[in-house]
Image (cartoon, rainbow, N blue to C red; front, side, top):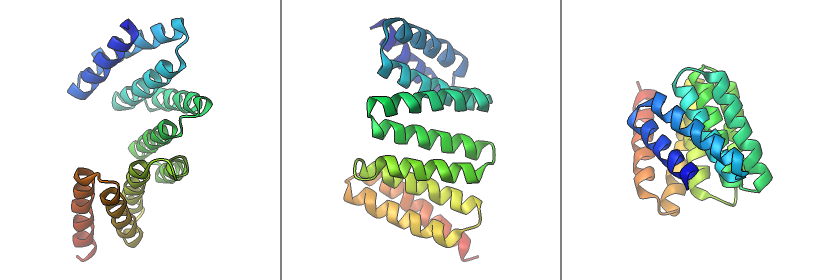
Length: 177
């Protein structure tokens, strides 16, 4: 219970922007989950600590923690969570300007989500569209965003579909200039 509470508080502090407090609480939760041998708790904390590390500018620690979380999710057979780790590794790669690595991670995420999570696949496609824009592939980005919007609408995730549709319109306007 204490480890779970510290993890929830750590995530809340991260969302509020207090990354130092988030890191402290998440590290405490990680240590507790390690002591009791809770693999799922460890993977969640590693994922969250990895994200916080990236946000704090420590990309290498972030990558290491996210890869450790990914390995645990795979061992546990949690493919959706593995896909989410690939998404975060892609975001980390984008943060450091490595669009090739980001694209590779997102293809891994799609493979993890295929047939298991329509929402996850749609989010992967939307992130791939962002990578496509960074690499100057506007037509492909437009195609991916359109497919992501269709998938999200079909999955009933209207809010995300609307957000990506706005991105699609912005992309079309930018490309038409």
